[in-house]
Image (tube, rainbow, N blue to C red):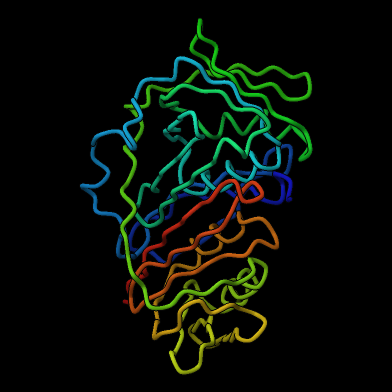
Length: 313
């Protein structure tokens, strides 16, 4: 499992709308890390803006904090979760039940969204009543990054102060929670029945994304039904790159015709927070959002990520 320095992405400044995507470097902190930021893209949003308005709490979980919450989890698992979520948001509503926790979040530009589930079995110990924790993910990541990947991180809600207590190898960190109602409401994950479903190793996918980055700021994923090969390609002003994946490179679960253009900036952020060696399932269509899904915490958690298509101009 990668450590936080391997999995936490760089936070990048927000470019002005209507300008080409750029990635100016961001100064790293003392651990060589920096945190991500949201920025607008020329994309078709996968999220109906009305779907982020206040609605009935997900799964009937109340918006109020749980009356009790105490959990212990391996640092590597928690780092992966935080790294993934912080790609899109810096605050989130953590829905807690006796069975585990769920998080749904969308970036400020409505370009990418995450739906994460972590079962109680992903924790070394887990005891909780139903409720919602509003947390600043950047502040939670601060003490967690001090842990080695094999360390255990203890989390519990102090009933007197209402603060979340984080204990890492003798270090006790107390952080104030946020009123969950002040955090942007969770999006509803659209349901698509897309014609192409393939599974590819994260490292192979990252190779394709890095190759596309050599020539362009966008990347196209496509498949032709009669070939059953996934093609990752990018066309720049003068140069082009193509990577064809078939045979041992991918597992084709459903073959069909698909071709969609995506922001390379977002693709890089999403892919590099996936743990190395993780099988990633991709759902593709003709000019439809990209759906990436993979397991977390040794199979006791899942994350589904959706990325809007980029509009060609």
